[in-house]
Length: 465
Length: 111
Image 1 (cartoon, each protein chain N blue to C red):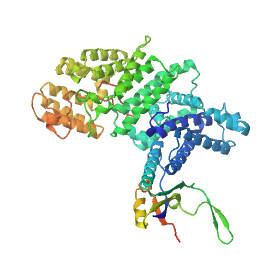
Image 2 (image 1 turned 30 degrees about the horizontal axis):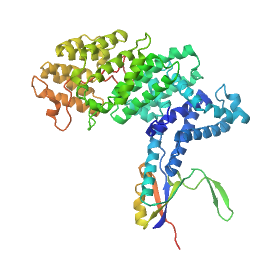
Image 3 (image 1 turned 120 degrees about the vertical axis):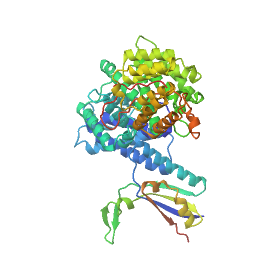
Image 4 (image 1 turned 90 degrees about the horizontal axis):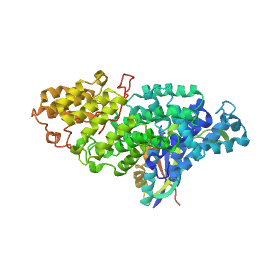
């Protein structure tokens, strides 16, 4: 964590650190006390600063306020409660209370606590989707409503999901031990996966608000940064994951136009790509290549790299992309990956080959709720010169659309079918008010976890684009 | 220029750190704007929600301020304006209104 981190997310960032250190001090069984103390600390900071202005080192101030509130809580509650078992004796005596707390609030100790809590949240007894929600809630300071908003779930459903997940944490009675080397390495893939899913939810998720989604991407990248700083966490897989996120995030500014509409990859203005993130992604991808390990993150980062390295959309090396998707299918096959592969095949060999590849996807039924599956069929039919066959697919895709941006995007494609011309009419010609629409299938977004525990595709990779 | 007291009442607390930060930044921006335009006399302070009330010839002490939550004074500021109308107009930019609160505008008495 450096001092130049953006101030807009200061409270959110510090919230995760406060929750982590207080959970360590109070013990995981006192989670609600932790939340009360954190809430109280923020309320105080907010109210004083709104009158007096922010101090020079607000993060340090917030931590001091949290420490003082914790001290109050410990003095008030120590006869009625037990705290972290390994600290109980030190916290019970007034002689050692303050110095013990000072030690726990040292920046390095806090960093370790954040990691410990992150690993605790990725407990295998908690479902993957709930792990992501829990990390967002505990480590990124998202309220229940904000987590629900990010996943387009109802408040009640999200509350239930988080309560259930917290119960597992509490029952574990102890936080994950990051000093346990073997345990660390075996839990690490689950932690990487949660970061990956969090990023994906931001990049492709159902939330209609761009700001919400961008902050999920930011949080995922921040958490990956914490892993990278830890000697056991900084593996080639972590680097590959971080590279993937950099390369994808670099494209965020070009993914939506001024009106907030989605812009398909081939039509994105590459001048808008974030150069610094691209360079960082390149650097990390090279670092990830040390050692023999090849993870899905490596392959997906390589796909993202091929896309960003093309000067223009039409320069994309589709042969390489198809090869990389083949590789991905052999490491972690899923219908979503197969669909992305089929789209790449269509780019390389034409729409008929793409349609054939789609027809061959196994377990296609898993894509049933996924708007970009029918959309891809529609696009390829359209490009094959069969607008009448394309249209019902776009209608189906529209029915499945998860937010207004997707809906507008798909409406334009449906309008393109009405032209009846054998060649594709650019959307810009159909609706002059919006920017040029895609002529090729949009990159499929992985299905969102959704409000209900209904089946979603088994894998949610970051497809290229 | 005359002095006016702003008393802020009854705004609801945001529930997430992000929201709190956003509300705080709105207040900071509003106060800064008043200062830039030369209307700030004293930024004032926020007040705790607790307190005691002392009452009557017996000086009876009771716990807690009088008011219900919505009437509770949460803080004060002293501003400068040419008259009461302008002071009231200036208060309209206060973020307290977006969270269900109110501002009481009172002229500071002069000799």
